[in-house]
Length: 143
Image 1 (cartoon, rainbow, N blue to C red):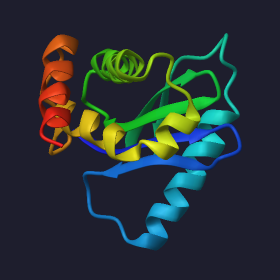
Image 2: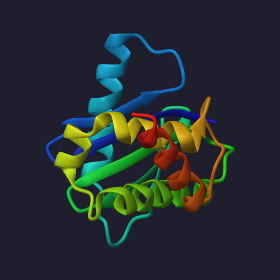
Image 3: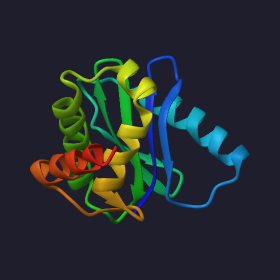
């Protein structure tokens, strides 16, 4: 199960956060800072994209200046979630062209819609890019 999802820039500003487990505001703030310190300090060429974190595991991927981080249970398949991160970025790229940090900031409602189409209650539900994009087209046609 996914505990939380964070998208942070290199300076540590959180551009997207989605929580699937109960945490207080104080715990959330502390976790965001810890995740950024842990992920940003790692060597991108010689270390894996998986980090033991408290009693869980962080699966992350860096795209340009953004870190996409999923906190998962230790017994879950890390590679499936790494592919999930890549799918998430591919869908955003398909929808925006080449997605950047400003797209996440100014179109946050769309980013959350993509996330909600992919993930339900902390579990990846949809892995087809075409299905996700068609659902987003249906949502945008309702506006």
